[in-house]
Image (cartoon, rainbow, N blue to C red):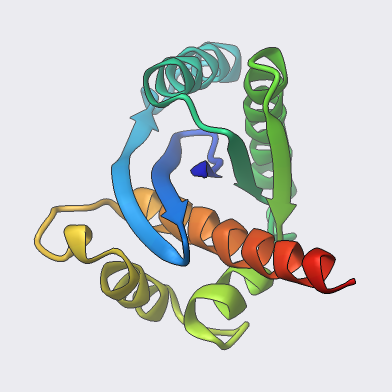
Amino acid sequence: MRILGVDPGSVTTGFGVIDYERGRLILVEHGAIRTRRGAELSERLVVIHDGLREVIARTMPQAVAVETPFAGNNVKSLIQLAHARGVVLLAVQLAALAVFEYSPRSVKSAVVGYGAAEKEQVAKMVRILLPACGTLKMSEDASDALAVAICHAHTAGTNARLQIRA
């Protein structure tokens, strides 16, 4: 199964594509869709939408995993993040793909085994779980997106095994 993980952001949206086959995780592609700081939100949303549509067309995922927002204290940032997530969900829906959403705590728990893990711990585990990442330069946004994809791979695999046993 090919999974696209997305870490939405209103300035930078990370993405990571993995293949999950028989319990093995294989890196396909990772990167970030960067918008121009200071640009109007509507301009940035178009860049995110178009960039994600290109990634979907190029990599042809079967499922998309998106991180849900962390409710911080900055309301303006949270609203802009919600707009970015909306554009991500729109792009996925237009591509007729299944979308799965995971909280940051769920992602950390699935990747590190601890829901309150630090970003550095998550990035290190992503590199361990995806050996092809070991020497690659990777942005924090791409690493986070790969973690979301890995979370879905582990969650989908567990759910499939549970359905078989039922």
